[in-house]
Image (tube, rainbow over all chains, first blue to last red; front, side, top):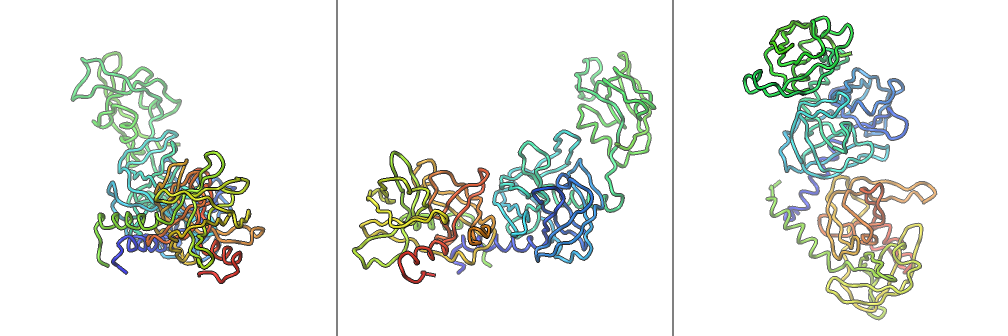
Length: 296
Length: 205
């Protein structure tokens, strides 16, 4: 039988789908098309935040047909992740994560209907990051695939040919992108969500746009900064003395060349702490101290 | 399990395509309409004729139907039977043509390899590959019949052509495309049972 390597590959893929399929639940959290979730710990399911259009009357359906109530433990729109608690879930939880390499075979596997598991085949198209997709969504790392994302595939798993998960599959970052949130990153967010229900994200309260720095004020190869065009009332930035017209150059000596740099500088562990903010005001370098707020 | 090299695996796919291709025909109707057909295994006692399965929507209301074999021979075909609900049609050709090997579509698994040979947009003998994406059932009003979902890329012209497994056996008849990217195929055992009923013999499987 093993003289046909194609048959061996075919069986391996079907085995992979069968194995991961037991850890996948159908998630009923929106009016029409159900989505998918991944059981990663006893009673805990990881899913995509955008498929939860309501916060109550959530149910999941397991591979063996049981319909169970689910409660939201925490959700984070910016990484499109949410954690559900399901009492009596009792399904196999996902095994160890696989490291994604571009070109590897990848199967998108999901449970979008009570008819059972669904799968599509592709490859790992790209491993990259960070990904900023507007509306505050942001992923440090992501895996892109050409496997077809059928309706209800969000919250499913992108797995390798042995069924080990590369990550949680989602189309929540728009632009027709089918991506997976790497398992390690997803589990890290899940841990934060189970601990405190939300993910801390720093916040200054300014609206800014990227500007080129005058040659005289470039240092260390930094050619751009952020021009403050609005300071919100009672925001951390206002309390710290930032003004419209300031050009933001650095936070805690990390250069701020664009909005991505600022998002990276305002990580959750800086919430509530004072940081030094270097600016140009009226052509003069100044340093302010701003206490980073929690993003509302 | 002994791990085969990627080259061996792709060579095996090429081999399976090569073997299956001989039993796939182009179905030409009217002025320029093209579908695909499968030379179905059947007893040839009655005058060396061959049976070809295709979709009903390819040939009904078509008038004259010709088939073109993989080696380029053209035959005129007679419409022997059709079923609009199953979207199946049976054609007869007066020639001994190589029949396809039919697999067991009652034991399909989601994730197993699948490929199609057909004439998408009228282009001859195009091969596309993917997996069995799902196994569904039609509503009660359509007798709860099972059907196959696949991510194998299909287009108009693939209709009536084979969905094949890793051994190159026919497991389904490609019938339609949903939402632009989901292929729907009729399981081969459903097609074979229909054909058996028409011919008054026991199904091959």
